[in-house]
Image (cartoon, rainbow, N blue to C red; front, side, top):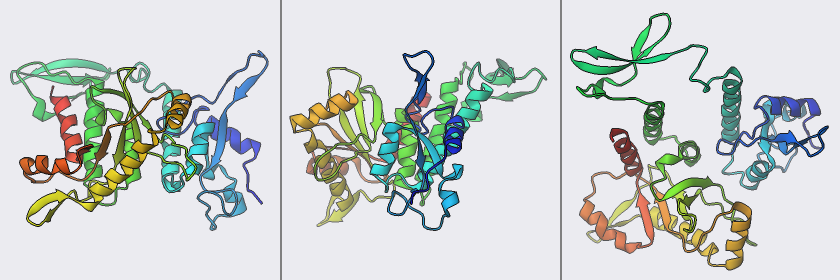
Length: 343
């Protein structure tokens, strides 16, 4: 017997996220008007975090029937994302789904309170410049006369330094990524979630968007690469990016020669399997119809491991072992983000 949600629970789940999909990189509205002016349509789903019945996705036998059908065990999603989370239960764990729910409810609360609109108009905060010891500093001022620095002490200059909201957000994201990289308990899902929320870390001047969890349908079971990178040029083709942990070893010494580790070769084999999917025209046409994306013999990119103190000349030499693979370490990603902040 299934422990389904009742109508009241479904309404609460939808209302708590302003009827938007809770998946961080989706967030689409799930309700709107029909052609009939007296009716509305709904494409939202009250999804179970742990299954409604035994044998279902993420089933938890420790829960009671009442707990399985409660608001605590529910997550509001659009139909596509509801299907997605039940198609790959290892990727979409209960912990990840609860984090999606927490973030979605926080976004809805901020939206309802007007946070993010007119820069917290209720608090009415002002930005000003101050001269301290012949150095210009950026300040935040409030009506009650309180002030604080907006820039860091390391950024004191004799020329103007402007800390935009985008810069401050990037600084916070850099700190978050560095903390994840140094956390031995951080999972691949945690890094997946970070890059979904901060796609600029994996995009460059060649790409405009990172699409996560694109399902490559095939008879022997679906393939789901971490990201398809959509190019800026509308006539160009997408490339594939896969994530591995920063703790993964990249290089090994064999017969007095540096070589890529088995983990790198395994990642390359996984990317080749994704790439070969697009050799079939029917598969390419299916992805284009479903996602409006085109790919053929995509570049294979992996973010894996740390750079360390390996000789860059030696690294360039062993790159010939896997000529089609573009390998980026987490240090490469972090340093590129820091360089952008210094521009």
